[in-house]
Image (cartoon, rainbow, N blue to C red; front, top):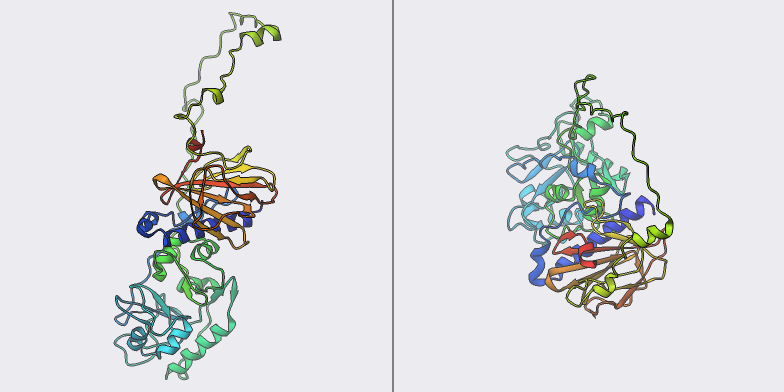
Length: 412
């Protein structure tokens, strides 16, 4: 299975858990401790670099709530703000600001939520001209990333608005445009959300944490984003952690050398027993099936029969992967209620079942689901089939609230 498939699987699992948090009522708080950098995509998916890459804090806005970068500006909402009140504060038409951010003019905003400004506005306390530039240097339009592509139209519009809003632009000497590396150092990249994207998929594509992305853009606890929304990509605060320096010791100064075995005393002759006698001497293996009682039976049943090809290794793998032929029935590990059925970007179903004691089980890599959200299921009931793949396997997780836990103690 390719790294992209693992990535899609991890994104889909995250979407299922986030969707679950919206429908749990009084249990919504149990997802507050969700790992924002959910990385349960298997051994081939490793986003450790994103977690280790520290990001700088978002700059503080001016008195009007505006943060100015060389190529664009954003407005930070205050408590009780709406799109209209932000527009009035910065001197823009509410409909223009709302349309640019793909939101309704009367929509309420969260405290700290960010709106992109369609054109340059005056800095707080100044009589005109562009707002204060963070990062200094030549004013140049920052690239707007849309799935890796640069929007030339947006760059041209931003530059044109800046020239028209500056009365001294004609008299100003021509400046040398900075190169891409200098531009990246001055202002964070902007990303315009496309249909089907999530905060997690966007964060992964830029190798930053979802929490940093949420903090910079004032996202809500569900990390919801909307098509057409502009997001600022957090900038790194410094170099990654240095690797520990390996200390090389001179010969004779390291660990003491153990004394060599004595050659004076010969080794005892090895006594080799015949195969029949060895088999008689070997104690019989216990039949665990006969010894298991109702009290000692496993809490969960294996969702599919097969070998475990990838064990529980958080954060790289938040569950276990069980090899099984395509079409093998996938069974509910225990009785419970289907809490969510969602699909990743590859349209692969993901099933989440809620059990007693605040436990959740997650089933990914499935097809042909036979249950729907809200259904009551019994232990061992078929809920789907193993999806075809190379290799084909079921990804199975057990979660206590939002935190993953090793499934094996529940299956033994």
